[in-house]
Every structure is written in structure tokens, then in C-alpha cells.
Figure (spheres, rainbow, N blue to C red):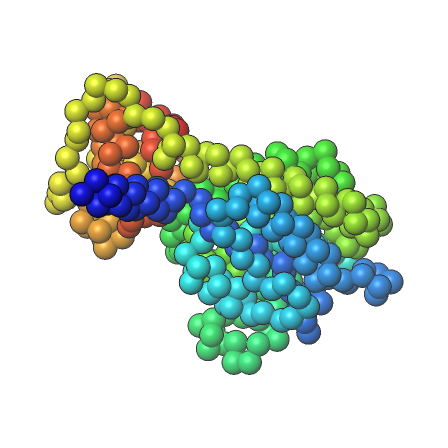
Length: 370
């Protein structure tokens, strides 16, 4: 009898640990850009290729994550010199139900003076003089033009033409549920890449990269230097410097994972009574929190620029509370008067929204909590 009880308890413990693992950052997809018949950017002397540099950096990064986090599944979209379509890369990440997608590239331009690293997330700049309309359009066109190597790309990508500016207009209408988390990792990557082998920081920007649009999780695209710049190329040619770049991206991953997992690992305050799951409501519209509202806790499910219909299927029957911060509308459910109360909703909510996290709402201010 005692043995039976022990077996049952052990099984329940395993199930509990498995459930907790599902809430943590358990899968990351690393995407070495280009490959095979697609060389990507090429040095002026034609001796060095983007596809080679990014594969090496990606492999080093993958090894570092595997060594530090044996429980994290690390997937490379390619592990050798082969061609993978943009759609195929995103499909690998989506099928794996990854928690994070990191696409690694090297930049290039017709001039030799531009240099440095940049970090990109999906979206459009609100400033018509930046990003899509000017500064990054050449980069976006070059990275997206890879689809021209694919058979019947107009069907696969719904008639998208990387050389036609009008093809990008539809991206203004997209809603990226993972924008805030993508920006969070992008800012960490920027912070850790500073002071590394690639000296100039060109910042974080929102751009319409197809490979990011197709992914269904937080995603960033890193441009780690210019192969067209002599100083950047000199660093990229050095194995030790490529290892340093990978280490800096790994440090960003490490910090991001600590934040991501923190809301699961943080102990709940004692003495709190269990709070029942949030009831499905049918309010006609999300209500913005007044500036003098009391402090409450909730689970943020996503943040987007557009205002969304509270009855849309994206909310799966929940009635969201919306907090407007800057240009983003942040949608929260599972609202409670206590952090412990909101945390009790987290497990159930993350089954529907894997990248949800706990927040504190103070008037019109919203802060992520661990």
C-alpha cells in the first residue's frame, strides 16, 4: 500500500514539474540566415560570405545555450550549408512551438563606411521618414529578396514582391501579439552587443522582415556588422571575435530567460486565499484604467498598436483590460487584487497564450513582475 502511494505521489510530482516546464522558456530556434545557393552578403574581394559567418556564430550560440540549459531545446533552422526558404524557417519554429526565434545575419551596403550592429523586430516605424520609408528599406529588400530564389514564391507569399514598396503596405495592418516580448529581447541584445567586436550600435528598429512576420512567437533579427566595411569584416574573420559575438547574444538570452521564467519561479505570498479562475464576461468594450485606480495585478497576454474588438476570437472568451502606454495597447486578463491571485491564473492562461506574463497595474502604469 505504501509503495502504491509513493508511486502515485512520484507520478503527480513528475506531472507538476512537467507542467511547470511548459511555462518556462523551453524551446529556442536559432536561424542562421541564407545558406546553400543563397550566399547572402559577400565581401568585396568575394572571399567571404554571410552564410558562412552566421552559421558559425549560430552554432556557437546554440552550444552555449545547450551547455548552460540542458533542459532547453535548441533548434537550428540549418546546421550546414543548405538552402532553407523563409517560410520553411518560420515553419520550423512554429512546429516546435518555440518560445523565442533568433535570426542571425550580416549586413552589407554599396558603400564601405557604414558599420556596426543593429537589432530588428517586426513592425513599422510611426515616423514616415524612418525604417520602411528610408533608412532600413535597402536592408529589408535585400533580406526579403531571398524569396525570389523559391519556386512559385508569389503563391507562397500571397503575391508579395520584395521590390515593390506597395507590397509592404499590408504589413501596416498586421497585429503582432509578441511585439512587446520581441522588443524586450531586442533591447537586451542591444545592451550586451555594445562594447563587443562590432563597435557601432545602430540601435533597435521595427521593420517588415518576412521571416519575422511568419513566426508565431517573440522574434528578433540581428545584423552583426557590415561585411562591406573593412573593420567589421576584420572582426568577423576572426574566430575569437565570432565567439565573442555569440557570447554576447547568449548573455542576452540568459537575462531574457531569467525574466521569462521569473513569473513562474517567484513564490506566492503566504496567507492568500485561492482565487477562482476568471469568469468569461461579455463587456461591450475594454475599459482603460483611470489614473487614480487602485493597484491590481493581472496577466498580460499581448501588446499591439491597434485597438482590438474585445469580442474578437483572439481573446478566447475573456474580456480584456487594456492599458495604453505610448503607442501600445497592452491587453490583460485574470485581474486580481493580489499578485498571488493573478499568479493562480497564469498556468491556465499560458495554455492559451504561451508568452503571457504577470504585471502590476498602478493607474495607467503597467510593470512586469516576477
